[in-house]
Image (tube, rainbow, N blue to C red):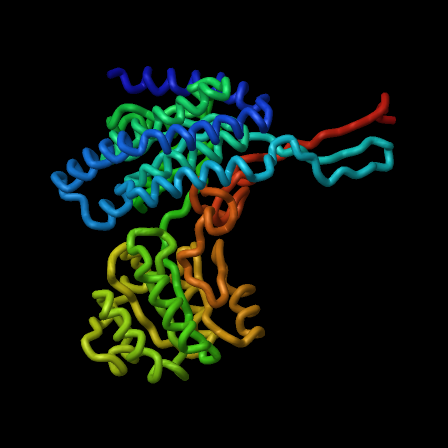
Length: 418
């Protein structure tokens, strides 16, 4: 296969399709989403069969447990994909909304209109459900998309692509509005990120190495986050039961996700009482603890933490634990080592909670809640295209509004400039 020619063809088709999608009505785009949901529901056995092929190949190729977990399409995850499509269809359409209309002294009216970005390239690893999440948000927001999943999920992604094609066809939209790259050749990624004539923005979802490469080599704007080094800080004013439940959930609900807690911080005032209880709960889940000197003195069997542990995204049953000198120590540690993804405080003190929200510089900051909630579905976005830790255009979980831009619109009545 001539990969460059193939990707150029996808780009040309996506650019043409993006114009049709942008001028389509909300009802038509919603029809495509709901028809895709029905197609997925009808294709459960086909999806399961394709996913089994990918899992078998993954095991044969030595994929680790975190990657296999991301790759698996359980019945519950298929349910979530279907529900996500229906939820996105029910969301208000941002495209065409005009806001901030004001009269200027000249008599003209000036406002801003929400418009699609155009063609969005999505590059991701392992998780085939991303194919549906990304396609649904791009389509609802009036964009065309080119999806390049990981080679380990090729069978699952192609099965999902067939369902997407059925949904688009049922709504009378071009099937090229959502294209799943059908080659596992890595050269396809290099082509996709260097086609500014066809692609308007790239969204990478995957490991740090993938995102660093794309950020370095892309000639197209990138919406990204590199790491998910998420913290939970247990304050001296925390409710102990809440602290235990939130910390355990934040780490053990799922290990292989970017919003999983990787470092637990505990105020020195409550560390002696809480750390043994926390250690017991984590050991019941077979979580390895790596702690600071004070942590090691309070719990037995803790591996002494190194400097690298404070900036590690384990994506595994390993947790760094540090005793800190109050709220100041927690904020200082987080702002030094956090990847600006998601950080949470457990406290019953309103003033401390507000200070944490104000001073922790992350895309999601939480009070008395598990970091696992940092997710587009949980935030009511229907699904997410990814999570951005950048500060320009979109930050945090990126949903429909993050996939649009704004242009100025001006209304006059024969006005001329004097």
